[in-house]
Structure formats: structure tokens, C-alpha cells
Image (cartoon, rainbow, N blue to C red; front, side, top):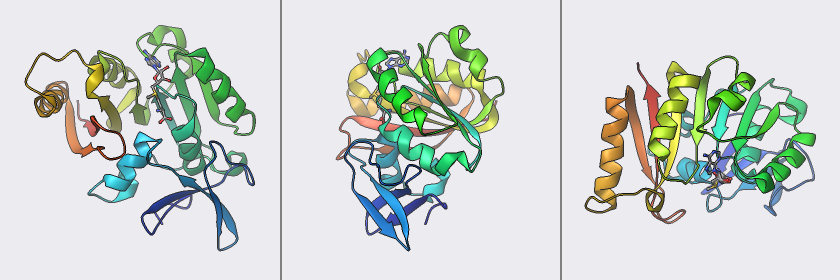
Length: 228
Ligand SMILES: C[S@@+](CC[C@H](N)C(=O)[O-])C[C@H]1O[C@@H](n2cnc3c(N)ncnc32)[C@H](O)[C@@H]1O
């Protein structure tokens, strides 16, 4: 077990289903000790892949249950749905709040559908770069932020969002897609090293850089702590 809502079983990851008897993206449902879990597919979720790959305790990648978190680039809600199981639980019994921002209206449609049965999930149609349009929905800073926007300028978008929304000492995870960056340097390793440098110079400590190749090629998940 990683937390009451997440379990790691024989190389597979599961979350306690907050909406029993329903699967979100075709994932397997299975009972453990009478409670229904959903299999978290790491090939379809960078957070899931990061949890499979991390060299540290898995819970260090996840927010505390029942807290407020911000997720930028929510997509169709695959990772969001598992994060919700952990953060909020059935009928939000844990009292969490998951603010999920995405630019694409087709994603918002799916997120809004998920939110109908998941109180505490707050989908926002918005641009991660334009805080003034939606920042009012995140009135207090958070202790956990996740970004997976897969667009150029990802690092600057991440730094700006953390400065605006993340508490000092909070944890932020940046899923970086190498192909989305305009990089004229010497290959991917150099790109990933330059991202680490940039984050360090912008007031973050790098806790771990997790290579996702095998699950998501050419992606690294940076786990950073805001220190200033
Ligand atoms: C790789 S997908 C996210 C997948 C999702 N994180 C998951 O694991 O299920 C990237 C998403 O970022 C969104 N996106 C790209 N640029 C954005 C921006 N500036 N602001 C908000 N969302 C953005 C895209 O619409 C897309 O849905």
C-alpha cells in the first residue's frame, strides 16, 4: 500500500475506485479484501509511469490525501481520475480539491463528465499561461502541483505557475516532453540537464528526475521542491 487509496501489487498499480462498478478508460476493475480498485495504466499516465519508475518511496510523488492540488494539462482525465481516487475518495469523503486545467474543449467535456460523480474535482477550460483568467479558483497556494502540457516553453510555464500557486516547500512535478521543446543543443540528455539547471536557478531543488522511456519515450518527470 502507498496510501489508503493507492496500492502497488506485483508490478501493477491500483486505486480504490471512488465511483464503484465504473471504469473510466477501459481499465480493469478488481476487488482486494472486498474493496474495488481500478488498474492504473502507466502507459497512459505519466504520473502512473513515474510511480512505477521512481527510485524512492512512491508516496513521495503523491499529494497528501484531502488537500487542494493544481493539475495543468489535465487531458481527458486518465491520471486525474486516479489522482482523485487517492486525494478525495468516494463522494469526496477525504475533503480534497483537484483543480484541473486544460486548454482543449474536448478535454473539458470529458473532465466535466468525470466531475459529475466526483465532488471536489474542478475542471477549468483555461490556458496554463494565463493565470488571471482562472487563478481566482485557486485562492490559496497549494502544496502539490502537476504539469503535463506537452507544448513548447513548458519549463517557463511551470516556473511561473509554481511561483504563483505553489507554497514554499511544496512539491511540483513537471512532465517534460523533449520533442515539444525548441532545442538546438546536443541531444536529449543535454536538454534534460539544462532543464534541471534552469529549475535549480529558479528556486527549486530537484528531488528526482524520472526517465519514463518504456512507458512514454523521450519524457522525463522532474520532481521539484520549491525552496524560494
Ligand atoms: C499529454 S496531454 C495530458 C495528459 C494527461 N496529463 C494525463 O495524464 O491523462 C497534454 C494536455 O495539455 C493540454 N495543454 C497544452 N497546452 C496547454 C496550456 N497552455 N494550458 C492548458 N492546457 C494545455 C492539451 O490540451 C492536452 O490535453
